[in-house]
Image (spheres, rainbow, N blue to C red):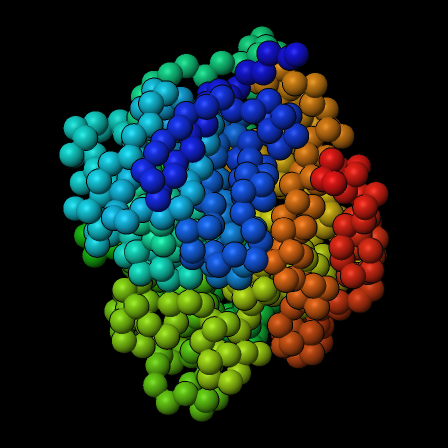
Length: 594
């Protein structure tokens, strides 16, 4: 048997119903076949729950897991993943976050924490150097994310403790609620915060300083230096350092694919006012980064005397162009309000955008209007606390639009709102949206890299040829990266062989490029199989009607829509699925999923 390194070596299982906590060894087959992070979550949730169960019931399984590369000092090795059945759309979701919490889970002595059942009263889990303890959290219930973090650190008397928690949105079980860590970092999509809220789980606290071992430190040092040089020489990573993720605002807008006013257009006339360049020249205080980061893409900004991390590109677009708003200060404040409340800063403004169009068309008689900033922050608060008009938006645009008779105005896939790229000008990225196993999403297969940014090579965004293959490769590689504990941004500079070398040197397992991609493919298929059992079919692998039938009207993509066929059938065939999108018995056997 191989002596596997890179892992803390222990997992904690928590039965919230009975209050029992059990610490056990991390299974070797879980490491070998699923690596960590998203892979651990997908396997554990699949093994322990009925895909048909209510995601807000005690039957849901909630998993927090790091990867073998998390916290090892590898550049950008900081990530952790939360997994569960999504209350937003019923998929087997995962959400990824950085900062320092993932690293601290490992230093506390754990690879993963798994939660079953539901506590009768609010609790939090304390992880500290191999020990795990459930503690009362009643005094923290009702607090915002920032208040909870400050209070827990103060009460523990441990400034080195790292906190992941929910805010009021999670407590109110908003289906847009996320899990927040390090104050302003979000495991942001698919409603994971609502799962914690339904379980009365307020927070997870990690502290301690246990060592993290590597199998072959000399080899790992060589690989580290190689990838460091690649990242530092990469032009996209350099731009992220200079302007952060909002550097994309002008780039995407100039390509005619910046969704504007609820995807009615792909071009925002005032995009420059909310761009990364404008942020740098107005509200930026300094750069920040996650543990072991050499890119430091995060922006620390000041608005009206408040200083916080953010905003990132997606919330800048969502509160900006998608709402027709060009006030970067208001956009930033609205993003921060989401962070305090524990709200998805894509899903919340997307619901607002949907309501704005509904009012514009006369389908509703109250609510916000495009371009208006008055009352925006208050509306975000109402969403987080399920109050007033915000209560109608707290479960996302799809349920709001459906309730009012116009589900076609929800710009979502599988009930999860699409992010900041219009797929009518991106055939490959559109396929990634439509087939994503967690619904509307960009980080489960970022085809923006080749179709817009030219990484690893520039491909024509308007053609279909080859896009099914590109999509599959990006989806499988991303799943493996999420399992490893690395930041996805490293993929601008690194290839699959780099991640394989990092994993092999750290863990000691015989992981080459083919083995790494198979791990990613196994994770993807496992999530797909869960979703099928939860009721998803081929009909769900599509985009909103608008994106299939209403052509863009500006710049290079003018006259284009997303073309579902033959892309979808080609994709299914490449994946080894049948014509209905179900993994065949042969494919399941090949991946060990029988």
